[in-house]
Length: 435
Image 1 (cartoon, rainbow, N blue to C red):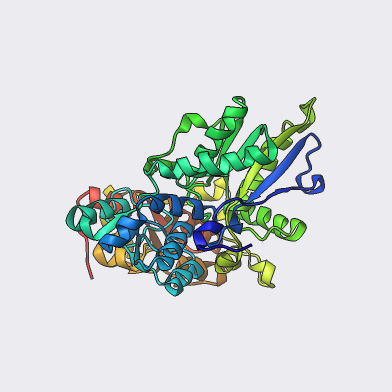
Image 2 (cartoon, helix red, strand yellow):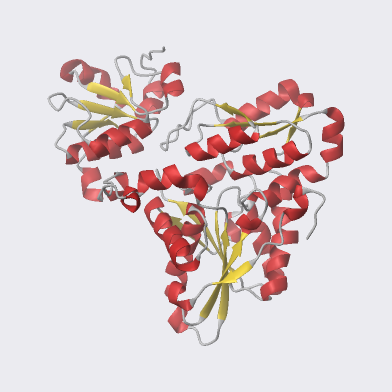
């Protein structure tokens, strides 16, 4: 086949039926749509081109820079399209959590502006929110940029309704169950809208990551308010998946099916199996289910290695995901109201696990900065801090630091958690240091 433009390769992705030995389902045929077959390697290729296509000539004429807030697949696809059309692309984002993804964007030529990073324990009062920052930038220099707006642009939904959903109908006809991870929500929303034209009884399950966990491309339930396209009533169910289970699902697909997809796809697959195994035996007629293989696994090597080192011959990690509710409940917590007096009396080591830029902007006086990833590594690989001194753990809101305190307590450290975190400290108008 011959093509004149790289964008002609986007979409029309293959559909693969999974073996019943993998799904464990007798009465439900499961199909996976291999979206990573698009040229830039993900389901976001469709969206990126749709957001730009109608305006590409005018963008070139004005020599505008494409602008988006993305730390992953959307940025990669936009940069690929930008490069092929002689345009520049800038992405504004909180810190990119997967090293390979950042490296790929740099190699492709993207300009990356990273704001003071949010940890996996988000700070709701962070003034450096990327979408707010983009609004301000457009207000100042709007003529310079073309903002694609993946979180609010209805073309995100439209492309999946007109293309992805139609392709599925052409291949399968009626579909009974749809499973998809919730990021911008465009893929599940648009696809579901189209599939419901054929089957109004379609059941749609949206997948989110567990709170304080991180699965690339999937948000937590608490983060969904940031997504302008999200419509809660569209979904019959919402499945919460943690990164450990997502990686197990990913490995099953890689090793047993030859599907070289990433963690998001693993989460989709695990959610599907859990949900449909509950109803499979009750069905009296065959049904059809589908989920997306969103992208490939190679870009997540460091993420996978960090969370499942045993795959590579390392020791299985005992991270925060292994903590029990009882262990978390046993963590002593210091409230912001009493913190200054307690710190003065106990003289603890205060460990702030936020990113270094966020720490430099404002921190509790006397605290030291050990960013989340480094602290996690130190705790999991040995005894990181003086065992003879009390430790007060601090994060933006108090959730993630509570888990770190529990891990340290497991190793017999006298660890405490600042209950309301730096957010509470700021709200209480306590003294803050800067660097």
